[in-house]
Image (cartoon, rainbow, N blue to C red):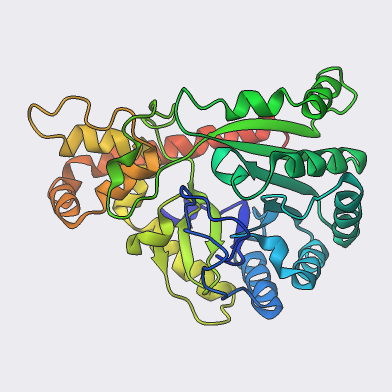
Length: 354
């Protein structure tokens, strides 16, 4: 199935160090996390390898973390290099640096001149223990002044979480949204409610009290679209929330891989039948079809799809699934091809090359 999958996004998880220590952080980032961070040489190498391996489909480089703004000059130079290689660039940040609108404008203007095309902010109750919402709002206003596309992801922890409502009701955010809706800032600003997963060690069922994620009972959107590197240079099969803790979702590469090294590793992911099955039908569908025990009612209802995925990779679960691979192989391959064609059609309708 290798020929089906060629990623559109290169995600560089530049560091696990962060100015915040959110309890639900998918990578366990904090100020006390490992100080290992990508060097400029490594980032340039990953960009070169990705362009060599996936040049026809690769469109954007995402710099994330941890907190990528902690890289300082390295971040600016890496953005400039990605732009030089013809790629769009995006950063994901908690906005700790936006202590005022004026400072945020100065910071973003420098990055914009380096080639930054878009900024994403993460906020919500967990984040705001460390980074006040006002700083994220400052960053949004600064991005608007520079006509830089901006997306805010507000973490949601169940139906009682009012973080999204409180954010969009902020006077300055409401003004930006109104300007967008009136066509004054088309496609430049968006606020999303993101469903987050508890990260307590060893307990994939911590998410059972929250509402089921809409995508849970369908194919996984995180697989095969982004090629992701960890700060240590590991390759992740997805940008999903459990990739760091699941050895089946990561591969070791040479310290400075070339395009051939990257393509070979990527193809190994594309040959993994369980990953193909998750891509085609989704982890919850597989669990309900093959692993749910007699008398166990709606075992995965209310669970985050990444938590269900983690359950599939338990040794006992994998053994049971392998025993039925042959029964599902033909259907899964057909679904993979169908899903790929549907995604290709959607991209063409939007004027994008797939």
